[in-house]
Length: 312
Image (cartoon, rainbow, N blue to C red; front, side):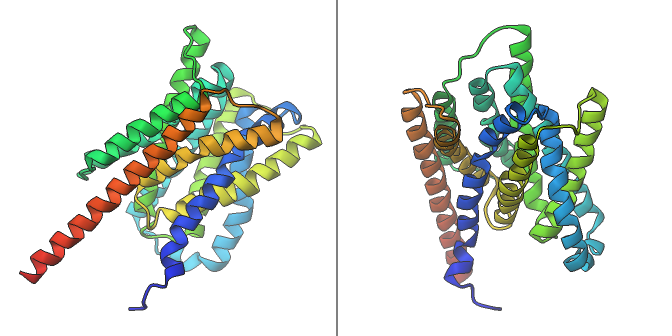
């Protein structure tokens, strides 16, 4: 067996760091695409997946065809569920920001680590208490950082529900994706999942009468940016990291998108976050650190017990 190099051990962590930065640019780019470019929200969701498929599928067919042919039915089912979950995430989260205020939508979609943790428990995994404390702190920090002000109106309630569904769908996406990645490379997995998500989003766009072309040049430039950054680099590196990092930890790390997006929003859109965002961001970082540290200590404790049992 080939010894694992330090760079190979660090690769998943590096991938998540880059992914968080890439995904953080999503919200500003969506604003540019929808505002200056005139691209409808659902069309943004469709095109960022479809353009990625146009790049990934030929690559997968050229270099990963034997792997795709060897995919089991169980693996295909997992990819299908993951692709549908990704489509649901985009189809609910993007419109929710229009129906309710952006801050509330962001706070609700950021509950995904809670759902990922619950899914892990359902699958028989026991999460340490420190992980739950960290998840609760990080999600509370996301609510505080976005300055969420929950409003009561039929439109706002619908937006809130859609944002919550988007958070649950994101949890399904990373949880099932972790299992699917056991059979597939990053390229093979993302090519299949993005294709399924594109088909689902296309059906939603056609059913809702969403315009899929005729945008201003700024809209197409923003869509290309969304495809290359948040989609190709961000989501694809998340899928790469899922091969080595637990789905709950991935969901937690993605909460760091909130402070990173705030910085990018200030730079790209001249949007200054409210003063309350500062302690919220600090709480997110502290919560993520507590959860990951507790998980790491628990894993090392289990390994020591296993070695002691083996020695006995």
